[in-house]
Length: 302
Image (cartoon, rainbow, N blue to C red):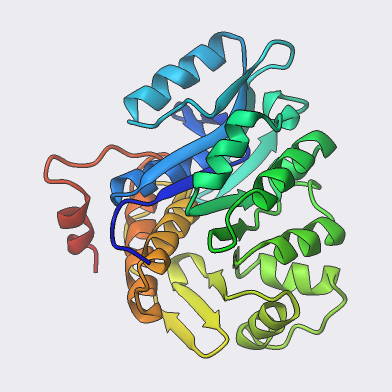
Protein backbone atom coordinates (compact mmCIF):
# COMPACT_ATOMS: atom_id res chain seq x y z
CA UNK A 1 0.00 0.00 0.00
CA UNK A 2 1.09 3.55 -0.65
CA UNK A 3 2.48 6.05 1.81
CA UNK A 4 0.13 8.83 0.58
CA UNK A 5 -3.02 10.16 2.24
CA UNK A 6 -5.66 7.48 2.76
CA UNK A 7 -9.43 7.92 3.03
CA UNK A 8 -10.41 6.43 6.38
CA UNK A 9 -14.01 6.40 7.61
CA UNK A 10 -15.26 6.32 11.19
CA UNK A 11 -18.74 4.79 10.88
CA UNK A 12 -21.35 4.82 13.63
CA UNK A 13 -22.37 6.95 16.60
CA UNK A 14 -21.79 10.71 16.80
CA UNK A 15 -22.83 12.23 20.12
CA UNK A 16 -22.10 14.66 22.90
CA UNK A 17 -20.14 13.34 25.87
CA UNK A 18 -21.63 15.00 28.95
CA UNK A 19 -18.54 15.03 31.19
CA UNK A 20 -18.20 16.48 34.69
CA UNK A 21 -16.12 19.27 33.11
CA UNK A 22 -18.78 20.05 30.49
CA UNK A 23 -19.93 18.63 27.17
CA UNK A 24 -17.56 17.53 24.43
CA UNK A 25 -18.30 16.10 21.02
CA UNK A 26 -17.58 12.40 21.03
CA UNK A 27 -18.52 8.97 19.79
CA UNK A 28 -15.91 6.63 18.37
CA UNK A 29 -16.26 7.72 14.69
CA UNK A 30 -15.48 11.38 15.38
CA UNK A 31 -12.73 10.59 17.90
CA UNK A 32 -11.16 8.13 15.46
CA UNK A 33 -11.46 10.48 12.48
CA UNK A 34 -9.92 13.39 14.40
CA UNK A 35 -6.77 11.47 15.34
CA UNK A 36 -6.65 9.99 11.82
CA UNK A 37 -6.46 13.55 10.48
CA UNK A 38 -3.72 14.51 12.95
CA UNK A 39 -1.67 11.54 11.72
CA UNK A 40 -1.91 12.78 8.13
CA UNK A 41 -4.74 10.79 6.57
CA UNK A 42 -8.25 11.95 5.62
CA UNK A 43 -10.48 10.95 8.52
CA UNK A 44 -14.19 11.15 7.71
CA UNK A 45 -16.97 10.63 10.27
CA UNK A 46 -20.10 8.97 8.84
CA UNK A 47 -23.00 9.25 11.27
CA UNK A 48 -26.37 10.90 11.93
CA UNK A 49 -27.34 13.79 14.20
CA UNK A 50 -30.63 15.52 14.97
CA UNK A 51 -31.96 18.61 13.27
CA UNK A 52 -31.71 20.35 16.63
CA UNK A 53 -29.47 22.77 18.51
CA UNK A 54 -27.09 20.01 19.64
CA UNK A 55 -26.86 18.86 16.02
CA UNK A 56 -26.03 22.40 14.90
CA UNK A 57 -23.38 22.60 17.62
CA UNK A 58 -21.98 19.25 16.50
CA UNK A 59 -21.47 20.53 12.95
CA UNK A 60 -19.76 23.65 14.30
CA UNK A 61 -17.49 21.52 16.46
CA UNK A 62 -16.61 19.19 13.58
CA UNK A 63 -15.60 22.23 11.56
CA UNK A 64 -13.45 23.48 14.44
CA UNK A 65 -11.77 20.07 14.59
CA UNK A 66 -11.05 20.22 10.85
CA UNK A 67 -13.33 17.28 10.07
CA UNK A 68 -15.34 16.88 6.87
CA UNK A 69 -19.00 16.62 7.91
CA UNK A 70 -20.41 15.91 4.44
CA UNK A 71 -21.19 12.30 5.45
CA UNK A 72 -22.99 13.25 8.66
CA UNK A 73 -26.74 12.88 8.07
CA UNK A 74 -29.42 15.07 9.70
CA UNK A 75 -32.49 13.46 11.26
CA UNK A 76 -35.70 15.56 11.32
CA UNK A 77 -37.35 13.42 14.01
CA UNK A 78 -34.82 11.95 16.44
CA UNK A 79 -32.52 14.00 18.69
CA UNK A 80 -28.75 14.21 18.60
CA UNK A 81 -27.19 11.54 20.80
CA UNK A 82 -25.85 12.22 24.28
CA UNK A 83 -23.91 10.14 26.79
CA UNK A 84 -23.65 11.04 30.46
CA UNK A 85 -20.13 10.15 31.59
CA UNK A 86 -18.87 9.91 35.15
CA UNK A 87 -15.13 9.59 35.74
CA UNK A 88 -13.86 7.51 38.68
CA UNK A 89 -10.73 8.18 40.72
CA UNK A 90 -8.49 6.33 38.25
CA UNK A 91 -9.80 8.28 35.25
CA UNK A 92 -12.01 5.42 34.00
CA UNK A 93 -15.37 6.46 32.52
CA UNK A 94 -18.85 5.10 33.26
CA UNK A 95 -21.42 5.66 30.51
CA UNK A 96 -25.17 6.28 30.46
CA UNK A 97 -26.15 6.27 26.78
CA UNK A 98 -29.46 7.84 25.71
CA UNK A 99 -31.84 6.15 23.27
CA UNK A 100 -33.42 6.28 20.77
CA UNK A 101 -31.36 8.98 19.08
CA UNK A 102 -30.43 10.03 15.56
CA UNK A 103 -27.52 7.59 15.15
CA UNK A 104 -29.94 4.71 15.76
CA UNK A 105 -31.44 5.59 12.36
CA UNK A 106 -28.47 5.63 9.99
CA UNK A 107 -29.60 5.57 6.35
CA UNK A 108 -27.89 3.72 3.50
CA UNK A 109 -27.74 6.43 0.82
CA UNK A 110 -26.10 6.86 -2.61
CA UNK A 111 -23.65 9.30 -0.98
CA UNK A 112 -22.59 6.69 1.56
CA UNK A 113 -22.31 4.08 -1.19
CA UNK A 114 -19.87 6.35 -3.04
CA UNK A 115 -17.86 6.97 0.15
CA UNK A 116 -17.70 3.23 0.86
CA UNK A 117 -16.26 2.60 -2.59
CA UNK A 118 -13.58 5.26 -2.08
CA UNK A 119 -12.56 4.27 1.45
CA UNK A 120 -9.18 2.65 2.13
CA UNK A 121 -10.33 1.71 5.63
CA UNK A 122 -13.57 1.74 7.64
CA UNK A 123 -13.75 1.50 11.42
CA UNK A 124 -17.05 0.37 12.94
CA UNK A 125 -18.16 -0.80 16.38
CA UNK A 126 -20.82 -2.77 18.18
CA UNK A 127 -22.61 0.12 19.91
CA UNK A 128 -23.93 1.75 16.71
CA UNK A 129 -25.47 -1.59 15.73
CA UNK A 130 -27.85 -1.64 18.70
CA UNK A 131 -30.78 -0.76 16.37
CA UNK A 132 -31.76 -2.88 13.37
CA UNK A 133 -31.83 0.09 10.98
CA UNK A 134 -28.30 1.27 11.81
CA UNK A 135 -27.02 -2.30 11.84
CA UNK A 136 -28.38 -2.77 8.33
CA UNK A 137 -26.85 0.50 7.08
CA UNK A 138 -23.44 -0.27 8.60
CA UNK A 139 -23.34 -3.72 7.03
CA UNK A 140 -24.41 -2.36 3.64
CA UNK A 141 -21.53 0.13 3.91
CA UNK A 142 -19.03 -2.62 4.72
CA UNK A 143 -20.23 -4.81 1.86
CA UNK A 144 -19.82 -1.86 -0.53
CA UNK A 145 -16.11 -1.38 0.25
CA UNK A 146 -13.45 -2.61 -2.14
CA UNK A 147 -12.00 -6.07 -1.43
CA UNK A 148 -8.61 -4.59 -0.46
CA UNK A 149 -10.10 -2.03 1.97
CA UNK A 150 -9.45 -2.56 5.67
CA UNK A 151 -12.53 -3.15 7.83
CA UNK A 152 -11.75 -2.61 11.51
CA UNK A 153 -14.20 -3.86 14.12
CA UNK A 154 -13.53 -1.89 17.30
CA UNK A 155 -15.47 -3.74 19.98
CA UNK A 156 -17.19 -1.51 22.53
CA UNK A 157 -19.27 -3.48 25.03
CA UNK A 158 -21.56 -0.80 26.44
CA UNK A 159 -24.41 -1.54 28.85
CA UNK A 160 -26.53 -4.29 27.24
CA UNK A 161 -26.11 -3.15 23.64
CA UNK A 162 -24.53 -6.32 22.25
CA UNK A 163 -25.12 -10.04 21.73
CA UNK A 164 -22.90 -12.99 20.88
CA UNK A 165 -24.47 -13.10 17.42
CA UNK A 166 -23.81 -9.41 16.73
CA UNK A 167 -20.18 -9.75 17.81
CA UNK A 168 -19.58 -12.91 15.75
CA UNK A 169 -21.19 -11.45 12.62
CA UNK A 170 -19.17 -8.25 12.97
CA UNK A 171 -15.91 -10.17 13.32
CA UNK A 172 -16.74 -12.10 10.13
CA UNK A 173 -17.08 -8.76 8.31
CA UNK A 174 -13.76 -7.43 9.62
CA UNK A 175 -10.12 -7.57 8.59
CA UNK A 176 -8.88 -6.37 11.99
CA UNK A 177 -10.52 -6.64 15.42
CA UNK A 178 -9.57 -4.45 18.36
CA UNK A 179 -10.85 -5.05 21.89
CA UNK A 180 -9.61 -4.51 25.42
CA UNK A 181 -8.38 -6.90 28.09
CA UNK A 182 -11.69 -6.75 29.96
CA UNK A 183 -13.77 -7.41 26.85
CA UNK A 184 -11.74 -10.43 25.69
CA UNK A 185 -12.78 -12.88 28.46
CA UNK A 186 -16.40 -11.65 28.21
CA UNK A 187 -16.43 -12.38 24.49
CA UNK A 188 -14.88 -15.81 25.00
CA UNK A 189 -17.66 -16.63 27.49
CA UNK A 190 -20.32 -15.33 25.09
CA UNK A 191 -18.85 -17.53 22.35
CA UNK A 192 -18.72 -20.46 24.81
CA UNK A 193 -14.96 -20.78 24.33
CA UNK A 194 -12.30 -21.38 26.96
CA UNK A 195 -10.25 -18.32 27.89
CA UNK A 196 -6.75 -19.35 28.93
CA UNK A 197 -4.21 -16.68 28.03
CA UNK A 198 -4.80 -13.49 26.05
CA UNK A 199 -2.57 -14.78 23.27
CA UNK A 200 -4.39 -18.12 23.07
CA UNK A 201 -7.80 -16.47 22.97
CA UNK A 202 -6.65 -13.84 20.47
CA UNK A 203 -5.25 -16.49 18.16
CA UNK A 204 -8.44 -18.56 18.39
CA UNK A 205 -10.61 -15.56 17.47
CA UNK A 206 -8.17 -14.61 14.71
CA UNK A 207 -8.26 -17.99 12.99
CA UNK A 208 -11.94 -18.78 13.55
CA UNK A 209 -13.09 -15.48 12.03
CA UNK A 210 -10.58 -15.19 9.18
CA UNK A 211 -8.90 -12.05 10.55
CA UNK A 212 -5.53 -10.59 9.57
CA UNK A 213 -4.86 -8.97 12.96
CA UNK A 214 -6.33 -8.97 16.45
CA UNK A 215 -5.40 -6.32 18.98
CA UNK A 216 -5.92 -6.48 22.74
CA UNK A 217 -5.41 -3.17 24.54
CA UNK A 218 -4.51 -3.25 28.24
CA UNK A 219 -5.07 0.34 29.34
CA UNK A 220 -1.90 1.67 30.96
CA UNK A 221 -0.43 -1.83 30.57
CA UNK A 222 0.08 -1.50 26.82
CA UNK A 223 -1.20 -3.87 24.18
CA UNK A 224 -0.94 -7.21 22.40
CA UNK A 225 -0.99 -7.57 18.60
CA UNK A 226 -1.52 -11.03 17.11
CA UNK A 227 -1.36 -11.87 13.40
CA UNK A 228 -1.18 -15.25 11.69
CA UNK A 229 2.62 -15.15 11.85
CA UNK A 230 3.49 -12.82 14.77
CA UNK A 231 2.66 -12.00 18.36
CA UNK A 232 3.94 -8.66 19.67
CA UNK A 233 3.49 -6.98 23.05
CA UNK A 234 4.14 -3.43 24.23
CA UNK A 235 4.24 -2.38 27.91
CA UNK A 236 2.59 1.00 27.29
CA UNK A 237 3.63 4.44 28.52
CA UNK A 238 3.12 5.96 31.95
CA UNK A 239 1.37 9.32 31.86
CA UNK A 240 -0.69 11.37 34.31
CA UNK A 241 -4.21 10.40 33.25
CA UNK A 242 -6.77 13.19 32.84
CA UNK A 243 -9.41 10.76 31.57
CA UNK A 244 -9.32 7.77 29.24
CA UNK A 245 -12.24 8.88 27.04
CA UNK A 246 -11.18 8.43 23.42
CA UNK A 247 -7.80 6.86 24.20
CA UNK A 248 -8.87 3.57 22.63
CA UNK A 249 -10.14 5.37 19.52
CA UNK A 250 -6.80 7.16 19.24
CA UNK A 251 -4.97 3.85 19.55
CA UNK A 252 -7.12 2.43 16.74
CA UNK A 253 -6.44 5.41 14.49
CA UNK A 254 -2.68 4.95 14.87
CA UNK A 255 -3.02 1.20 14.37
CA UNK A 256 -4.85 1.70 11.07
CA UNK A 257 -2.46 4.44 9.94
CA UNK A 258 0.51 2.13 10.39
CA UNK A 259 -1.12 -1.00 9.01
CA UNK A 260 -2.10 0.73 5.76
CA UNK A 261 1.56 1.63 5.26
CA UNK A 262 2.91 -1.85 5.90
CA UNK A 263 4.58 -0.77 9.15
CA UNK A 264 5.98 -3.55 11.34
CA UNK A 265 3.84 -4.74 14.24
CA UNK A 266 6.38 -3.60 16.88
CA UNK A 267 6.39 -0.08 15.41
CA UNK A 268 2.59 -0.01 15.12
CA UNK A 269 2.37 -1.06 18.77
CA UNK A 270 4.84 1.65 19.82
CA UNK A 271 3.11 4.47 17.95
CA UNK A 272 -0.43 3.42 18.86
CA UNK A 273 0.47 3.31 22.56
CA UNK A 274 2.08 6.74 22.34
CA UNK A 275 -0.98 8.26 20.68
CA UNK A 276 -3.37 6.58 23.13
CA UNK A 277 -1.28 7.74 26.10
CA UNK A 278 -1.26 11.31 24.82
CA UNK A 279 -5.07 11.40 24.57
CA UNK A 280 -5.40 9.84 28.05
CA UNK A 281 -3.17 12.60 29.43
CA UNK A 282 -5.55 15.25 28.07
CA UNK A 283 -9.17 16.05 28.93
CA UNK A 284 -11.65 14.65 26.42
CA UNK A 285 -11.25 12.59 23.28
CA UNK A 286 -10.27 15.34 20.82
CA UNK A 287 -7.62 17.44 22.57
CA UNK A 288 -6.03 20.32 20.68
CA UNK A 289 -2.51 19.78 19.41
CA UNK A 290 0.26 21.99 20.80
CA UNK A 291 1.80 24.64 18.55
CA UNK A 292 4.63 22.29 17.58
CA UNK A 293 2.21 19.63 16.31
CA UNK A 294 1.58 16.06 17.32
CA UNK A 295 4.95 14.48 16.47
CA UNK A 296 7.09 16.46 18.96
CA UNK A 297 4.45 15.93 21.65
CA UNK A 298 4.41 12.17 21.13
CA UNK A 299 8.20 12.09 21.21
CA UNK A 300 8.05 13.45 24.77
CA UNK A 301 5.99 10.45 25.93
CA UNK A 302 8.18 7.67 27.21
